[in-house]
Image 1 (tube, rainbow, N blue to C red):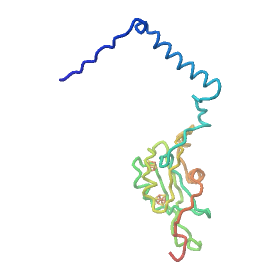
Image 2 (image 1 turned 90 degrees about the vertical axis):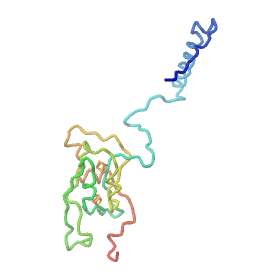
Image 3 (image 1 turned 45 degrees about the vertical axis):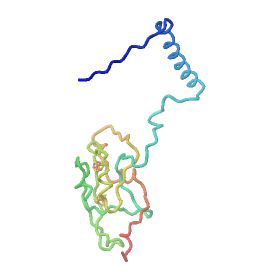
Image 4 (image 1 turned 60 degrees about the vertical axis):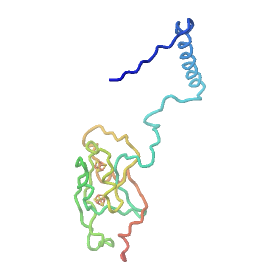
Length: 175
Ligand code: SF4
Ligand code: SF4
């Protein structure tokens, strides 16, 4: 094994008292203290009111989105349920009644739950969705006081996701 010899630095008498190092350290600390006193530099963040901005593509909590007209984009194909590695998604498919103007779409979820205790924020559900109906938020702080609260049902998922306009043509009778 080849070793490397690191020579000890030769310290002057002044340096060997360690005073320069201590004074430089104190100067840095005093600088931070004054910056903080004058409000020039923030060293703490008022979490959870303040959060770091997340970069584009950050994978946070999955949610469901509706289109501009409030229509459910999800057709309960269950691909996301199938692909979800920790089996966090549970869907009960529902049928769109034949007398509905959107009967052509055939299906919409009757129930849609995501267990946020199981979710690993992988984003596979978003990747696989053919209807662009499920999206990951940038929010990562999903909390709850009970296990039941951590299971997001359909209403909660739409409340979190809101509306996202996208060119989905399934509502168009000619397509
Ligand atoms: S982000 Fe991943 S783990 Fe979470 S629900 Fe989607 S597929 Fe499942
Ligand atoms: S969210 Fe997308 S992938 Fe999941 S059931 Fe609905 S349409 Fe299918």
